[in-house]
Image 1: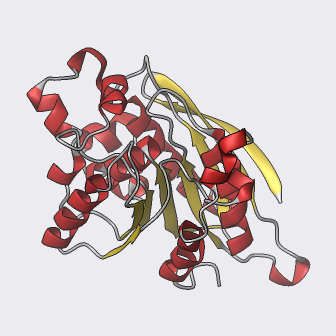
Image 2: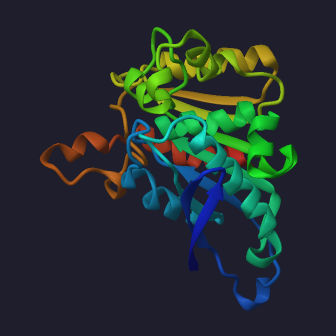
Length: 274
């Protein structure tokens, strides 16, 4: 494995992309692997390290090139992070030959507010003010799959309002802007296939967020696999010891039923890494 640190210029802002790039044994030289870009959560206030490298290592073990995007958060506002993610997807496609990436199999995986970011690219990739703003084509910035882990989706009744305050700044509360970033209202047939999970006990970002998006995707005819686990708080990441907080209450981040999302998403990706 080699680790690459990349600075991405997207519009007026910069983001940092860390790549965990698989290197092949001699017998498999020239093999192209799929890639996943990971967007950690943090309420658009920070990027959680618990949802970054530990997740990248899991995808690497599955056979993927993994990348962690450290995107712009408050005081930067929408669409800064969205443009950075769009640029990141296009950048991987541009480096496909050099890094032996299968450029038709690039997934975006997001947690909490990072799930909102990933889903935002899923619904907005074909808008000129997104792909054009980073000097790319819609095909270049389009993710091939979305993996959404307890995502922030709706700005309405079930919304995590701190995320939207950080995302919109002074535009928070504007009916037009709030509807724009309420992604269940933006879903359509153009959204790529989605894997999504949540927990019934999430008191920070209620499961209704993912349910609303699931219903919108079904109405649009988008391929979807959805899991609602009975136990677990918000922010579980892998739900294992590897991603748990070290504090005394760290055990609440180790939830066996939620650990199943890892083999489930591997199965859903369906041989991408084989």
